[in-house]
Image 1: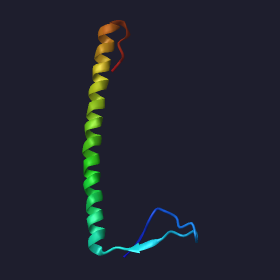
Image 2 (image 1 turned 135 degrees about the horizontal axis):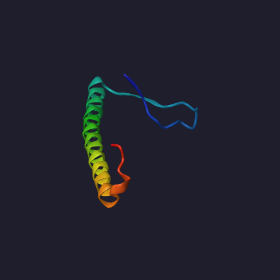
Image 3 (image 1 turned 90 degrees about the horizontal axis):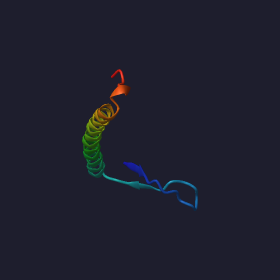
Image 4 (image 1 turned 45 degrees about the horizontal axis):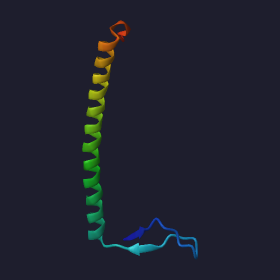
Length: 72
């Protein structure tokens, strides 16, 4: 299996290639999947925190300036 690096060879302008085994490929792919799962968990938590912060900000704004109630 051929794999390209992201560094360019300055001598001939091409990308150097190296061989990796199928086992190495699957290990790298599994690591990417694990990282993606962790990223999804973190993004979900950030989304929930943003919703909570928005709700808190609206509540504080309404308690400070009750005359400027929004239609939400």
